Image 1 (cartoon, rainbow, N blue to C red):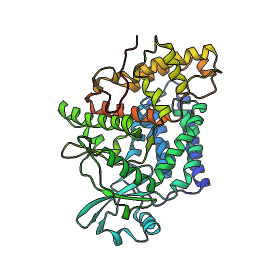
Image 2 (image 1 turned 180 degrees about the vertical axis):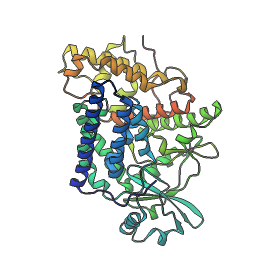
Image 3 (image 1 turned 90 degrees about the vertical axis):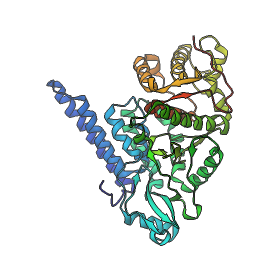
Image 4 (image 1 turned 45 degrees about the vertical axis):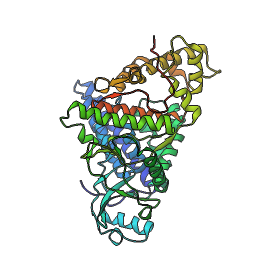
Length: 440
């Protein structure tokens, strides 16, 4: 893959690149509808061109723009051309050239990489949205060096603002919802650009989870880390995305799937903090068939006032226990006293249908993720409600902001387990306080 020699860092430069891309997408639509008049339109070709144009622009910009593409790649409601292309943002973005990496080392650690380490790869071994990874050797130890792209932290806020129009066009979300969650997204992305904070989170989370079976974490090196560089042990293994493509025995799929499920159950219900970026690029499978966790850039602490109503959805009979149902809906900011009866009714109906999908894995002690596609069911539900007049008239977003990364974590977890086709024991995990009851 061709290396990138510079990143547009000025607001005008970045805005111009995004505006040009928006115009190009608009031109693609004009061409598509022109062909449609003559009966020669090809929707798949339109999606492919749009996905290519957007990904190429976001790859050049990196940072917030590319991170949003990465998040969108986990949305199965998007056309396949988008999810496939945007998934490259997880670990296969165009890398930066070595001179830019050396410049970051000098500004952060005062020395070049080869002045610190015995060896240092001149090309990145993988590159994602916020930074890229190089391999190094130091006193017989193989290390992974994550280096943040220049200027990324400074451009995050403006990137999110400029990318909103494209996100609105392709994501199944309203402007009110996007604005409602933008602050939370921005905060989490800012956390991901603070490598000093990430290093502290990585050490904390790996230390608290190291007792879990079949999970391994790298050792971290604070003395070779800074606000823009993280140095850690190199974990040998196969990327999760490559591992699931192999012809694997079911017991191995179940083995890895169980490790992944237990990892998230313990974080969520015992630690009340969660690895909120569960995409394939953040996990490897070691030769010993252990799940290696590579990145703690996004960790969401779950407030008790959000945890309580959020996970009660597993236990409540929403059809009949109306008091508990309404308490949960209010606790998650889904309904309020100012809502009309009509709005409350449609929100409640929508939420019951959503809960029936999301909580399926909790309904039995064992669940087969290979026979389940949560996002396809949610897409069908979206089609059912997309033209509902009451929903379309609502101008307020619904849901607690804190829940966006819990949703992201579990949607991502289900997607990983689905691609693994794993059968796992879902018996709640340590610390889980609720028992499920079936919806009528």
